[in-house]
Every structure is written in structure tokens, then in C-alpha cells.
Length: 236
Image (cartoon, rainbow, N blue to C red; front, side, top):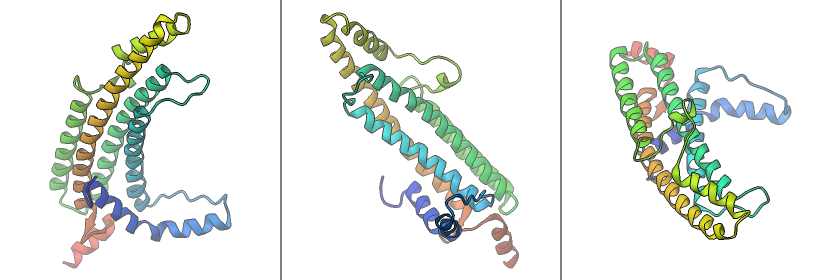
């Protein structure tokens, strides 16, 4: 990602905003490891929602890395179950990311609707999410991957099915050992390219998403909570 794109600018905003709230918690945790803070304030809602989305993005990046490398030589791990495991996790995380983006935008819209022109805010967030969801559905369409299997149907892929079959038969028939290696390279190359391309498109959407959220929750590059917005408006 480029410096200060939409995501990184929002990341910087959170890094500058949250220490004032989290430093007291960190001190309490040092004194008492069992200390627990429910984090009910809206500042935590803003931060934790962003953090959840960040975790999904990091997971998608990590899976791309895992798919690109050869599985570890460990008992119980083979080419088939290693690749299928990461592909299924990727599909699951794509679904989770989409739901987190939807939830976060809804929370921001609801909380700031009384502080900002509600009609304009609704239009901005609705338009944003229409673009984001449509784009994610397209990324997960016939040219990419589908995530509806998460709740609707068992995921199937011809290359992964053939890989699984050849790995199984290679345990009993030497002639399938070469086939299993070829099948693994074919499936690996296919899914690495799919995941890599999808992630690149997702980064663009994430930048657009956080550019919009940034304009809603900040003034002069500082987070302004809803009640602070109202005070600023009353002063003017």
C-alpha cells in the first residue's frame, strides 16, 4: 500500500486517538493482570470496529503468504489438506470482512446521524456500501471466488478435488505420486493468483471505505466524537 492511502490514514488517526484511553488501562493491567475494562465508550466502538476490519485484512494477507509457500514436512499435513484448509479459511474470512464492513458503517451512521446532516450522511454511507458490497460480490463471483458457500452450500473446486484424489491414491499407488505433485502445483498456482488478485482489489475498496469514514468522524485530522460534533456546531 502507498503512504497515507485511505486505510493507512485511518490507521494513523486511530494510533493518535486511542492512547489517551488505553494508556490508563495498560497501567492497570501491569498492576493487576486480571483487571478488565468493558470498554463501553463510543471511542472503543470506533477503535475496536476498525481493529476487527484490520484483523480480517491481515488474515487475508497471511493466507496469501501461506498459499505461496510449500507446506511444512509434518505428519498429518499433506499438499491437499494444507491448501484446502487455507482456501476455505480465505473464503470464510472474505465473508467475515464483508459483514464487519457493513456493521461498522451502520454503527458510524447511526451514532453520527444526530451530529451531521442526517440525509447527507445516510446518502454517503448508503452509496459507499452499495459500491463496496457490489464490488466484493463481483470479486467473489465467477472470475474470483464465491463466499456464499459459508452458509448455503459446500464449496467445490475441480483442481482441489483432483488434488485430494491424487494425494489419497498416491498413498497406495506409486503411479499417482507424480500426478499428485502436478495437481498440487496446478491448484496452488491457481489459488495463489486468485487470492493475490482479490486482495489487490480489496485494498482499493478498503481505501475508499476508510476515506469516507474518515470524513465522517474527523475534523482537521482529529477524531471528533458525536457529542463533540454537536458542541462544535452550537459554537458556530
